[in-house]
Image (cartoon, rainbow, N blue to C red):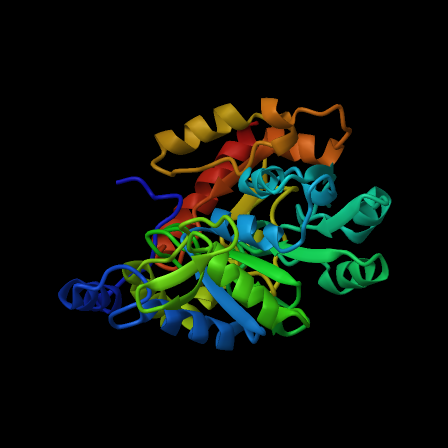
Amino acid sequence: MAIKLFQPSINHLEKNAIVKVLKSKFWASGSGIGNVRKFEKKFQKFINSDTCISVNSGTAALNLALSLCEIKNKEVILPSLGFVSSANAVLLNGGIPVFVDIDPKTLCIGPNEIESAITKKTKVVLPVHFGGFPCKLDIIQKLCRRNNLFLVEDAAHAVGSTFNKTQIGSHGDAVCFSFHPVKNLAMPTGGLISINNKNHIIFRKKLLSRRWCGITERKSTSYDVKEVGNNYYMNEFSAAIGLAQLSKLKKMIPKRKIIAKKYFNELELEDKMPFSTNCSYHLYWISVKNRDKFRKILTSKGIESGTHYRPIHSFSLYHKNCSLPNTEKIGRQIVTIPIYPDLTNYEIDKIINTINKINSKF
C-alpha cells in the first residue's frame, strides 16, 4: 500500500462529533447546536486575535478579507509561488497582483522584495507562509505601517505556526486560514478570517453580511440587503470536526516537527526545507534537478509525492514578463513529500532511505 502524500489524523472524536450533528438535524450554520460559533470562539482564543469569522474555504477567506481593503485598481504585492486562490482573490476584488520573488531557503517573500515593489498604487501586502514557515512579520508589519498598507496574510499552510512566540493569526490586519482535509487542522471544507485591526468591530459586521448574501438587520423573517454578498457560511459538520481537530492540535503539530527535523537531518540533499520550531509543517519540500524522473521512481517505490506549486505568473491568466529567478527555479524543481502525524517510523525511514538512494544515482 502506497504511503500517502497527505492524510488527516482522525479518531473517535471526529466520528462522535459527526453523529451528534446528524442526530441534531441542524446541519447548516446559524442554528441548532452552534458548532460554527463555538469553533470561531475557540480558534480566536487559540491564536489570540481580536475576532474570527468562519467561512467555507480558504479561498472564501481571501476573497472576503481583500474586500475589506478596497483594492479596485490598486496593487497587491504577493509571491507567485503559492496556490492560485491568493491571486484570484485579488482579481475578483478588482485589484492588480504584483508578483515578487521568494527567498530560496524558506520560499517566503522577504521585506527587501516587498519594499522594492511598493508604489503609489500599492494598497495591500499579501505574504504566504509557505508550508507553514512564517514570513518575517515584524519587518513586514513595519513596512506596511510606514507606507499605510494593509497586511493580509495567507496562512492556509500555517495553523499552529508561530512568530516571536505568538501564533500566526494574531499579527496581520486580516489573516486567512484554510481547513481543507490535507491541512494541519482538517475539515471536509472550511476557512477562517482572523482580524487584528483597530476597526475589528466594523470589519466583523461587514464580513458577517458579506459571507451570507449581504443580509443584515435580521429579525425573525425580516432582514435587509445593502450590498452584494456571497454564501460563504461554514457548515455544522465541518465546524464539529474542526473542534475535534483543534482539541488535538497541540499533540499533532509536535509530531509534524519531529518528522521535519528527521528529514532535515537525514535527507542527503542540498536544497530542502529548513527546520524551525516556529514552523507547523503543513508540507515538507525538497528540490531536485530531474523532477519527473525522481517522482516516477518514488511512485514505483510506493511513495506519493507532489509539486506545490507551479508559479502563478506562468499561468495564461497571469502571464507577465517579470523576472522571478528563485520562483522559476524552485517551480521547476520542487517536490513535496509525505508529512503528517500518523506516519510510522518505518514509513519515515523508508521515505528517507528511498530519496537518498535515488539522489545518489542522479
